Image (cartoon, rainbow, N blue to C red; front, top):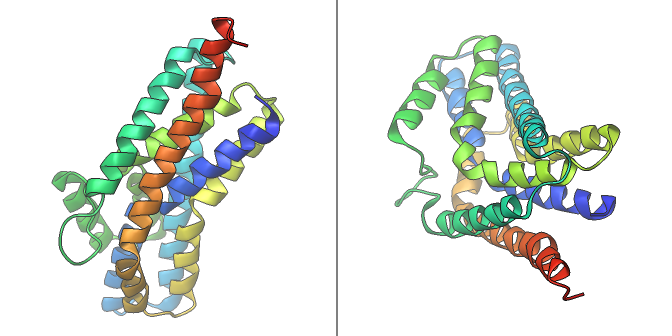
Length: 240
């Protein structure tokens, strides 16, 4: 797999990751509670930036850990069965996101286990220090692992055959793109934009984001199937 092709897959996977909204939901909930309790603006900035840093660190750690784990098991060349499994996961998640990523009704409540949702909600409301916000950022990424594991796994698989320098660049690129919406919301909150306006935009565009995420997963799954499964299988069978 060429370097350009590998990075194109990483970029697409990161864009798909960026369309998921759990971390943004937790950030707005934490910020809304802080604003409601008359928290000073400088402290609010520390909280939001701490949260952003936590989400960024966890995203980078996840893709680095998955790449390390796959390399430890299979070396620098992932087996065909693993690629086929990734395709199945991507397609399954794509249809799942289309159907029930958001809960029914108004608002932007996401389909995650109630226990996780209640924990994140309670922690967001109780967060008053930057270290707590950092921890909450870490946790918010883990809570959405069910949806983001597929793009992370695919990115890790295409990065493991590259040189260490390019692997690091790939991890940084994936992380930067995937947290870009969160960074944008953090900047909007810091610049004084009303949370109600941000939430109104999210609610107005939630179905588009849901469709984009599901479609992206399906497109990535189809591309991986053709590029890594079908072509390799045909080559092995003497088709080319």
